[in-house]
Length: 214
Image 1 (spheres, rainbow, N blue to C red):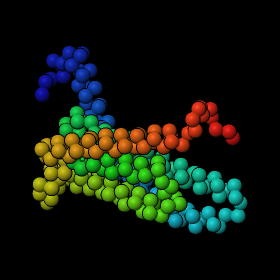
Image 2 (image 1 turned 60 degrees about the vertical axis):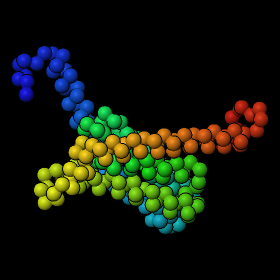
Image 3 (image 1 turned 90 degrees about the horizontal axis):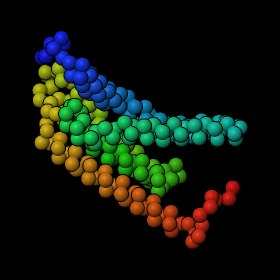
Image 4 (image 1 turned 45 degrees about the vertical axis):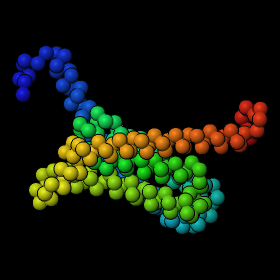
């Protein structure tokens, strides 16, 4: 280690910058299981919310309650997806020591969110079940290696399991997972974009460019 007194101002600034960046990435990785648990809890609270709505006698109160629930549920999934995107950055995933199946969790979560773009999961039971399965799979792919990999490095009774579940300790597998996840995410995003543009073009009459009448 270089003594602090020997470091120049530029070296010290660079060390602080890289250290703060690493701390921030690892902090996000540590917070994500909590956000996952919160997002899944709100998502699967839908039957309780529906039962509660039936007890309300004021229509306005029911609408406000339902809209608040939907906004919170969907916003949590978007926040989790946004924070999880750091797992698709090679310079972070392969150097910071993140959950090894985390990139696959990002892809599966993106699929779960994409379902809502084309199907009404609140009215279509099959779409709701498919989205629920994808969310459970995505949470499993992230939380398990996070808990039994990153957070269990000092647990000698687990043998080599923690090291195998961290990206920096299993680079050959990590590189393959990252490459596959990036390709799947890019293809999925491209399909969603093309389908959205196609539906927009097909649904809009020729020459229609103004906002819809209210």
